[in-house]
Amino acid sequence: MLRATILALAVGSLFLASAAGQDRETKVRDDRDKLKDSDVWVYNDFDRGVAEAKRTGKPLFVVFRCIPCEACSEFDKALLEDESDVRDLFDKFVCVRVVQGNGLDLALFQFDYDQSFHAMFLSADKTIYGRFGTRSARKEHEDMTMQGLRQTMLAALELHKDYPRNKFELAGKQGKPVDYPVPEAMPDLKGKYGAKLDYGGKVVQSCIHCHQIRDSQRTAYRTANEPMPVEVLYPYPLPETIGLRMDPNEAATIAEVAEGSIAAKAVLKKGHRIMKLDGQPVISTADLQWVLHNAPASGEIVVQVTSPRETGRAPLTDETRLKLPEGWRGRTDISWRPTTWHLRGIATGGLVLEDLTDDARKERGLSGDSLALRVKHVGQYGHHAAAKNAGFQQNDIITAIGDLKDRRTESEFLAYALKHRAGDKLPAKVLRGGKTVELKLPIQ
Image 1 (cartoon, rainbow, N blue to C red):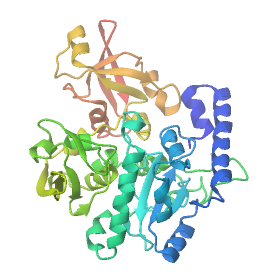
Image 2: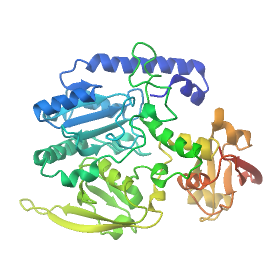
Image 3: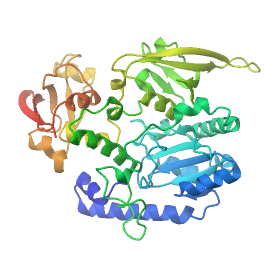
Image 4: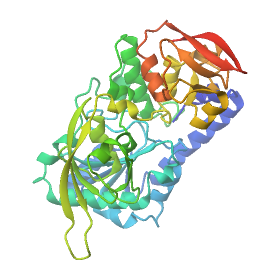
């Protein structure tokens, strides 16, 4: 739920920002008007949902939705339709729809805050059964489907059926200790937002976006001049980080394993259904990401998988180990994440970068193992204009910066740049029109 002022900076047009802001206001208000008296959804009131779960004995299905955000809007729309592929399962849950970050219990609701749609399944005593919702640089329909949500909901119902006998194995799914109980208590947000949305005023501007939680966490480390932990820089690694592509139509089934990857070395194969990871029941790709998010910098994770057998026979169950080498988390791509825009302001002065392809390198006479980051976009406003003011231009190719000359992705370069202190200026060499230009990139 980006505020109109921020949108104005992004598009450079106050008129467009005002129109977009009005449209967002309409979306938020229409959502409440449509669903506040729903016989399916408990609207924006988690505590009432918990009370209903205790009364009925049903598990909770809690959806977090950033209404104005376009990402996942079609998925959310399909979920709310009467003909939804999961509509018949709604009466087996207490369904809660949360449309704000304000007042969010950060000790309980820990998930990938770069999502604009996410779901969690819980018992009435707030024990987490699982998570659903993933997103990447791919189009949203390639990451999440109604069929996949259905399979995850069915798996959550199975866990609920066994609860509380299975409470011990669910322990790893629960939230970790936090520094602040709610987002509005975080230093970067304190005093700017209240615990509730202001439906009597500018409702969109009163809302805390989930991505602001991650931004504020990173800002706290930067303000304290402390190194940013890798799990904060590279949150919720996608399965591709260890060499897996998951089937979006299934609960946690492998669609492809990259050759030579961490997963391949663990002998994971296409068709394997991941049942448990690090001892935790896995019912979705988001569950897999939760385990990876909390995984060690290096070490081993036990994986329990099943593979299909002939009709009428029980599936084969097997156990293996994922061996995570030092630095494994840094392989994840964070360039698509909304919170990376915040990092670019700090580390690249507002530049959006991409690693040149091998073919593009050949055309320019660059080696395959050297640094070659093309400037896709140059920020124009505020601290995102620092690189522009330092002389960087769109389509520049950075071939050396600081003491870095070897090949890096944008994600890897961000990690490198963030090791420097605010105020540092990294000497850089860029190719521009066949000539080498020397510049200095400011770290903010």
